Length: 103
Length: 278
Image (cartoon, one colour):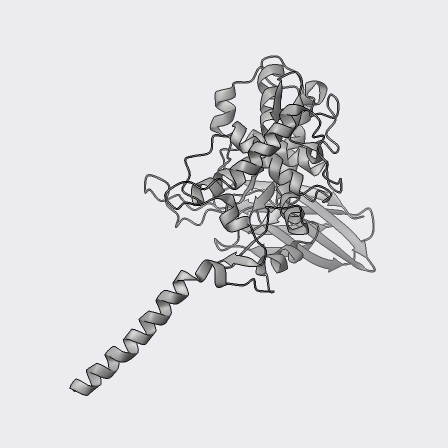
C-alpha cells in the first residue's frame, strides 16, 4: 500500500491553488540494480483531480516525472469547505486516493 | 606539408600549456557564480518539500507505541528538552546526556531511545540507516520529524559540560586534519568563501559566519538526486568518501565531534530544516 499523499488546497480570490506531494518510486524501467539487472518500470500513469463530482484535472504521466512527484495546479469554481479529491494509478495497477478541504 | 605540421605542433603546444596551468589552479581560481539553479528550483517548490512525506512517517514513528516494550518515543525519549519534547531539541544538539554519559547528536540519541526504551534491534535499525526506495529508514523519518519541530529556533549549544567542550575541540582538530591518498581535510574545501567545485558552491564552514549558518540550518534535507531525506551523519559520511578517507562509522565520536564543531559555527542561525538540496 502506497503512502498517503499530502494535499493542500487554498482559495485566493476565485482561484483554488492545489499542491500535491505524492510518494512514489517512479522507476523508469531503464535503471539497473547493483547486480546489473533491469529494475522494472513502475510509474504513475494517470492523475485525476475532482471537485464536487467534476474533473478539474486529468494528466497522463510517463517515466520522465521525478520520484516523489510534486504537482501544483489552479482551478476556478470552488468555495471554502469544498473537497478536492486526487487519485493516481500506476503501471503496477496500484492506485491511491486522498482528499483535502479547500481553505 | 611539413610547414603545416610544424604549425599544428606549435598551436598544440600552446593549448597544452594553457590547459595544464589552468588545471593546476582550478580549485583555487574558480570564483563563485551568482546564478544558482538549485535556488531557482527551490523557489518553485515554495513552502513545499518532498521531505514532508518523511515528516509524516516520522510523526507516526514518534507517537505510536512500537517495539517489544510497546512504548512510544513521545512518552519515553528525552532529546535534552525533557521527555517527549521535540520543539527546539535539534537546535541545542549535539549535547551531553547524563544517562548515557556521552555527547550525542540527534541520530545517536534516537538510536539510544529506540534500543533502550523500545527494545528494538540496533543492528536492524542501523542496517536501514540510509533509506533506499522501498527500504525505508526509520532514523531518517524520525530525524525529519524532530528537526522540523525546530523550525525558526536559533541554534545555541549548551557547551557547559567538559565532554561537550572536548567534543568541540576534537571536532575542530578533525576539521583541519589532513589525511588520505589526496591529503585532504574538511578545510581544503570548506576553509574559505566564494569557491566552488564544478557548479557546487562551497560554503566556508571553518568559522562562525552566515554561510556556515545557512548550510547547517538546512540539514537534514531532501536530496532531489537521491529522492531521499539525508541527515548530518550521511552528509559527513559522504564528505569522508569524497576525501578518500576511511569510511565514517555511523554515530561514531568522530561524526558527533565534527557535527559539534559545525553546529557551534552555525550558532545564532535559525533552523530551516528539512531543507531541499540538489
